[in-house]
Amino acid sequence: MKTTRTQLTDAQIETIVADAIAQEAAFAGSEAQPPSSAIVWWRAQMRARQEATQLADKPITIVHALAIAAGIGLMLSVVGYAVAGVKGSAGWLSNIAQSLAAAVDALPALSLTSPVVMAALTAMIVTAVIASIAAYVIFADE
Amino acid sequence: MAHRSPVADVTYLDVRRLHGDALDADTTDVALAMDEDAFRGFYDRTARALWGYLSRTSGDRQVADDLLQECYYRLLKSTVAFENEAHRRNYLYRIATNLVRDTKRGSRPLFADGVDVGELEAPQAHADAAERADVRRAMGRLKPRERALLWLAYAQGSSHSEIAGVLGLKTGSIKLLLFRARRKLAALLQTRVML
Image 1 (cartoon, rainbow over the protein chains, first blue to last red):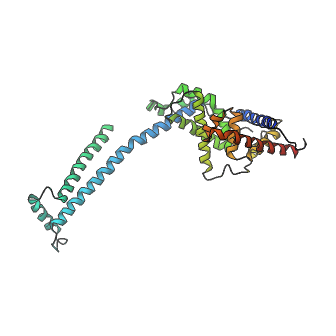
Image 2 (image 1 turned 30 degrees about the vertical axis):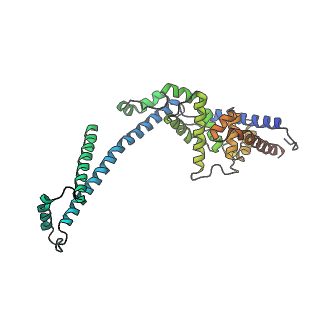
Image 3 (image 1 turned 90 degrees about the horizontal axis):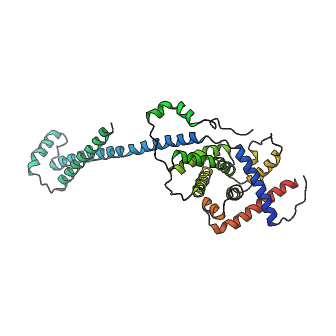
């Protein structure tokens, strides 16, 4: 079909556009083959359940990470205290057992307000608390 | 040839039979924003139209197929308190618009200007296939937002405020944007007639 380009009024433009899109929408409606609502519902349920499981697993991972971090902190504190106990002794590395024994000997004279002791105690308490929670969560779930 | 989904006619009972073991193991439904009956009714009323919107705004049937499920899943996971069905439907279209926009940001440029939507399989069986292909070709030359505007206005019959809500625009700007989009599409269609 051949025609000349004419100046259309706004109403004519609206009619042309509305007709064209309405026809295309009608065709799109007949062309669409969406999955059944049952399938979509079931997939949504499965996915939501999977996400809920992943979410529930997260706190355990966090508790594990915290427990490990606290354990490492405790270990570092003990080592730091041992090193501090033998400070000044140049041969501590070659005789580590002797150094640790010296540190243990020094324990009764330890000041509880010392920052090193406070750090070690705090790390021990935190580890104990977190480990208990982690154990409860893991075994309660099982 | 019309695109057909292989699972379109599968019923919920079929799904239960196919996945009987998995479902028997854990039959507790997860809490979603709607119950099953309400969802299925809403889906049956809106899925075809939403698929049309997705396919025409993205210019890709496969994208429409992929995004349809995602749209409804996000709706089900939403915590919005819907006032009525129209509110819920508009929210669904907003999700669809954002998903199509995000897809555009992905690896392939779906909405680059000049994308020929008419290249989609032409339904040869229909007598007016050529005319429809022309309409698609003309729509393919519109910007994605113009396509979405026109589709919402003339295929969905949405009001200006609804269109603004779906597209994230100001209500006051819709009239002008629609006016421009209409003129552009009409010019493209008129050019088609002259060829």
